[in-house]
Amino acid sequence: MQFPHAVILSVLLLLSLFGSVSATNSQGFDWAVAAGDEIQFTVDASGQGVGPLHEAMYFRVDEVPELSEDFVAMNRIPIVVTSAYWGNDSEMAYKIWYRWVERLVFPIGDWWLLRNMIVLESMDDYEPIDDDHFWGFEWAMVDRTEGVQLNVRIVYWKEDGFLSQYQSEGLNTSSHEVLSSVDAERIGLPLYLSSDFSGIMSMAETYLPYAALGLIPCLAVAWRTGLIRFPQVRIRKRRACSESS
Image 1 (tube, rainbow, N blue to C red):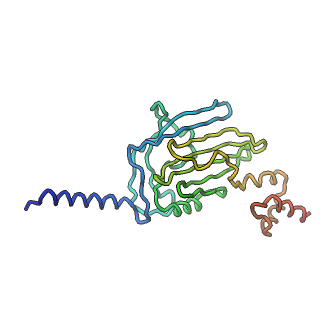
Image 2 (cartoon, helix red, strand yellow):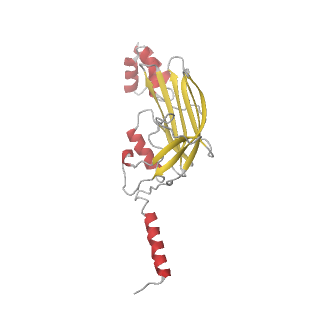
Image 3 (cartoon, helix red, strand yellow):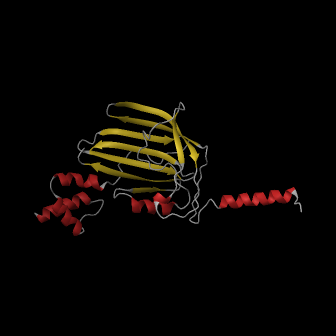
């Protein structure tokens, strides 16, 4: 028995449609990038002993894994394989400027769920970023031995889940001098924010001056009695100490 060519083509079309739908898992996540995509960036960087850097570069999507299984943790999301190139097409041997970016691409879909996964797995200084077009996070950590605070902001474009902006800066915790900075912006997209990191609420930065003064007992009393509340944390901590004395 022979089937008309039109019937065979119709069956193949239906099978292809079902195949594309199955790429979305039951949580509603799907990849919005494909192998061969190239994402253009400009990178500005500076640091102690290093001259200012202003370069064009791009990422190429090499392999997009299947996204069939549901996941309840970030480490269960498969990684999109990418390669990085400078503007002259020479391959970038190492994550020179984006060392703090664990993944360049997220599956699009339930951004609220992704946010909660990161909150559960991230450090205390985590601040989420989530609006109509952008999703990401910023955080800060302090190395008291070296006297350096690192601020990092990582932002993704919700349309395709790919990185859209990366910013980092290292500060001297005493002088607040900027020791190093990186600002990478995706070409052709608006910016989420300027390079100002003043919005990051770093608990480590807040407590560092008081720890240096030996006021940890006062802070403990203030915290247990509920006197410490943002944004008046510094005022109330001092008041608690004066009352205890």
